[in-house]
Image 1: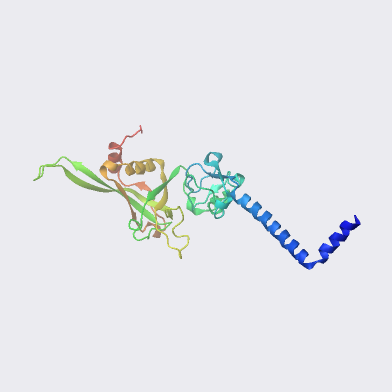
Image 2 (image 1 turned 45 degrees about the vertical axis):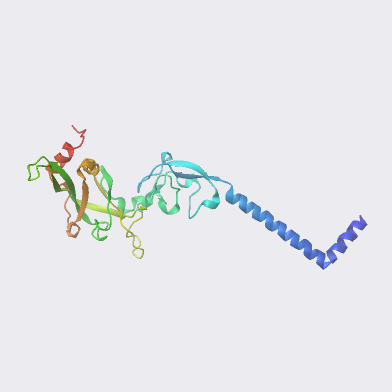
Length: 268
C-alpha cells in the first residue's frame, strides 16, 4: 500500500505527467460531451404538426394535430415540440397553418388574443371567404384592411348567333355581384399579413372578408365556373369614408339567378 501511495506521489509531482493526464482527461470530457450532443441532435423526438390546413382564428383541437418523429437538429426557428402548448390554442389572425406544417410560436395564440383582435370581428352566421388576388387586381397593393369593396363577376358566355362567319359568338358578361364588402385582412402566399411590416413589403395573395353563407355559396360557385372562364374582381369604393357605411348586400337578383342556373343548386 505504501508503495502505491509513493508511486502516485511520484506521478503527481511530475509536471509533464500531470499535463499529459490533464490533456487526456480534457479530451475524454470533450468526447463524452460531443457524443451526448450528437445523440441528442439525431435521436428523433415526437413533435406535433397540422394534420390539415388551419385557418386564422381557428381553435386547434385534437383533430387538427398529428405527430411525427423529427431529429431535433432539423428543427429550425421557434418550433413548438409539446402538443400541450398547442392543444385548444388558436391560430393567429395573421397566419394560416398549412397542412403538414409544424406549429410555430408566432402562429399560435391564446383565446383572449383572438377575442381582442379586430381582424376577426364579424357578425355571427357569417363565413370567412378568401379571395385570390395579386398586385394587379388589388390596384397596386392599394386595398387595405378596413376598406370596402364591391365584387364583380366576369364570365365568357357562348351564344348561338348568326354572324358573317356563321359561327358561335363569345360574349363577355361583367356584372356586379356584391356591394359593400368590408376587407378584414390582406395576406401574402404564406398567410402573413401584407401590411403588418411596412418596411418589408409583401405581395398580396388573398383578401379576407366575411359574408352570409348564402353569398359565400354564390362566391364559391363562381370560382368553379371554368367553362365560363369566370373571374371574381374586387373593386375598391369610398364607402369606408362615410359616417355610416352601407350594408353588405347582393347587387342584383339577376346575377344570383344566372349563377344558380349554370350550377347545381340544392336550395329549396
